[in-house]
Amino acid sequence: MRLAESVFINCPFDAEYRPLFRALVFVVQDCGFLPRSSLEWDDGAEVRIEKIRRLIAESPFGVHDISRTELDPASGLPRFNMPLELGMFLGAKYFGGVDQSRKACVIFDRERYRYQVFCSDLAGQDVRWHGGAEREVIRGVRDAARTWVPDRVLPGADAIFRRYCRFVESLPRLARRMALDPDELTFGDLSALATQWLRNNRPGLPSEMPATG
Image (cartoon, rainbow, N blue to C red; front, side, top):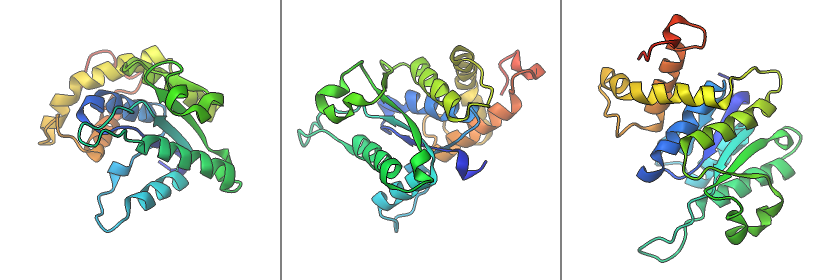
């Protein structure tokens, strides 16, 4: 898949967020795009902010979840990496030249209008809320992706969610076949397993009916 179809995923990576992250990776791939994440490349010699900058530069599309604003128990301060990376993405769109100006993204928060309290400069943006539900992040990405490539035919959000549920059901079996722990999948592992499942379960194939691995 070409970098021209890259989608930069900017979201939390902790265990609590794992189901939503898994749903984001799946829906991006099911819509025919390439999910990108700072987790895809492990190089201790590369400065993290440079990695983020490179991924943003290479990705015409983005998914940004700014919902994680809770205070850190140790420091008493919030973590604002996600809003920072969203700001970099928007900055690239507005100041990055002709190619970068074509960037498009979908922005999520946990609750409707909550972002206006901690990031009021986004008040003019169309921010979606997901309520912590996998179905809603799938719906948001699918509906945004339908506008990113208008001539691409995509199934509805409910259909993609049903396919996602079948993928999650098959995931432990798929992981074991590759000697992987389904609870400790890296971004690369998850992407590879989603690619394999989608290849074997394309809509319209006989394997679409039963829950296959």
